[in-house]
Length: 176
Figure 1: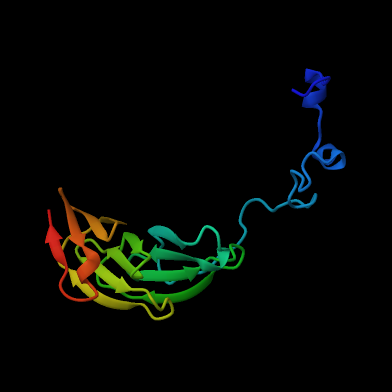
Figure 2: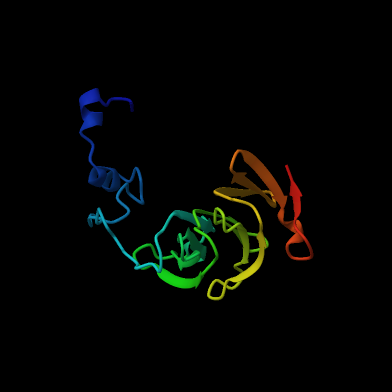
């Protein structure tokens, strides 16, 4: 509480008063009094049922945000979400199996897609408009996460780990 102000005065400050007094030059109202819509902002028809959504990209640059979707029987979908009010379907790749999860390793631009009995699909997403299947691992993969170039896969009663560093240059090494 500032010197000379009472509790009642502090509670009754309004955003416009802060601006008028120069306490916060940007003001606490970045939309300048305009309301922001609540509820549904945008919608995009998808080629399949979205089972999982993962968003990758820069938190500093909204122009570089991409969503990767596990689309059930329709494989992998890639959507530009840089403008949240106008998502754009960039690419889609049909994959064997029922895709339920996706994880992305941003550095090599590789998506790992869990397709249950269809396996674990490793997809090159360097060109989001034309994703390419690089390799399919024979594992009943229901969930996948990638950390540090290693894919951790839930396969039945096992957790399996796969070194993704060799996908670009050779076979994937399997670990347990």
